[in-house]
Structures are given as structure tokens and as C-alpha cells.
Length: 173
Image (cartoon, rainbow, N blue to C red; front, side, top):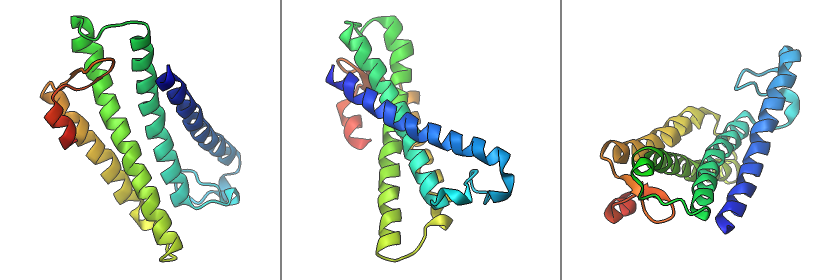
């Protein structure tokens, strides 16, 4: 029940981030002269385009990681057993993949936000030129870390949730 409550709060917070960005884009449609060109960033928003990309990316990652956690916790609360063959082969692999992919990407985005803040506060430099590298690294590493176990059939039931069934693989990823 605690996992359901915390993932619900995280879904709510992430949703506000994503909805705020969508509202910003809609406002920009009617006022296209004030756009800078980076992801629909609006000049009057008083935020750096790099900050918008970083916060939106961590919000998107956290939304889906929390949604996966909410789903698996809800099923466990309702005594759904993951050792049933239909769950094992279908749902459990999808949940394991999404858990690995989005949790890993959310963690990487937090690291990149820390790098951005360090560069901004200590070095007094913007990291706009690193946004593409951040995107490729966060999404790429997350995809690789989730795809390799998927193709090796390593995702499955590990108690009340689905993730890597082999303990040694959990330490690697």
C-alpha cells in the first residue's frame, strides 16, 4: 500500500510537469513570434531551454517508472501471483522492461540535472550544447540496459513485482 501511495504522488507530480509543458506549447501556438525554436520554449517563461528539457525528461521518465510501480503494486495488493504462465510470459516481461528502462532513465536524468547545476553554479556556464548528448546518453543507456535482459529472457517474477530474475544480473544493471 505504501508503494501505491508513493507512486501515486510521483505520478501526480510528473503529470504536473508534463501538463505544464503542454500548456506552454499551446500558448506558443497562438504567439509563434516569441518562440526560440528549442522544443517550443517560450521567451516569456523566464526559464532556460536546457532546464525545460532536463525537467521535462526527468518528469517523463518518472511518470512511466511510477506508473509501472503503481500497476505492479496494485496487482500484488490484489493477490495476483506472477508465477502464472500468462503473467510470466506477457505482462511480466513488459513490466520488467518498463521498470528497468524508465527507472534507469530517471536516475540518469537526475545525474544530468546535477551536472547542469554544477556547470551553472560553479563554472557559471550553460549546458545547452550538451542537451543532445544528455538525451542520447540517458535514453540510449536506458534502452540498452532494458533490451539486453529482454532478449535474454531475464525478466520475470521476483516476488510481488517483475524485474530481473537472476540476482547476479541485478548487480550488473
